[in-house]
Length: 262
Image 1: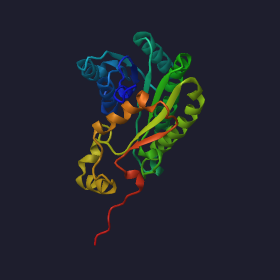
Image 2 (image 1 turned 180 degrees about the vertical axis):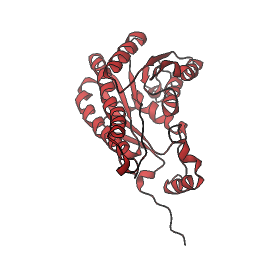
Image 3 (image 1 turned 90 degrees about the vertical axis):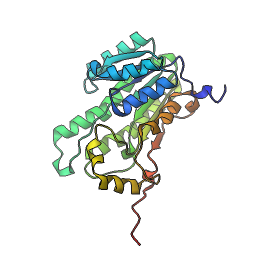
Image 4 (image 1 turned 120 degrees about the vertical axis):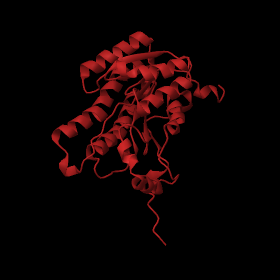
């Protein structure tokens, strides 16, 4: 097999949750560019029109599917529909997520449940539904999307950090469960990337400057910075990699801090 074909996803189909915008949309574009057809999901399938058009412009098939990851019946229905329409799913990008930013003392019971049910419980049950079918085929690539908060904690992000730390641990457990059946499970953990979900934070130039000082590469991430990583984890190039967390964070997880003034 040539080095180039290691990253070729032609003939593969990927299921990307939370694909109507942000990083999920970028993951869909990256995988389609590498040759994969895309089953894309959002709570409302109509919200996927833009992503579907982008995928189809690359010559790949797009299958929009409605999915609410907090609803077990919705997960079962969406996964069954995806496998029926696309024939089979080779790659799962478990991306759907949410966040609540509040001081820990202000977090409510409902805040906690919203974040954990979406980011951790949803990740598990979406993976479970796909893996039940992947195990039978003896092949699958599952990529759980985490974040730098898988390994670092930040004030004001209690439920989110808890959920992402859980995703890291869950990834290792599932890798051990499903590895004997040809299914790899890895966690792709982005650092600080500007999305619609956190765009308001990037309006503060002082905060962006402070953040950039803490990142060894001196800038927040751009969506394209994740393209190579998601293709790698989806491809034969990562065939002997499972249970791992791949941080794409510009180095902020090294613990870099703002330099002291001289």
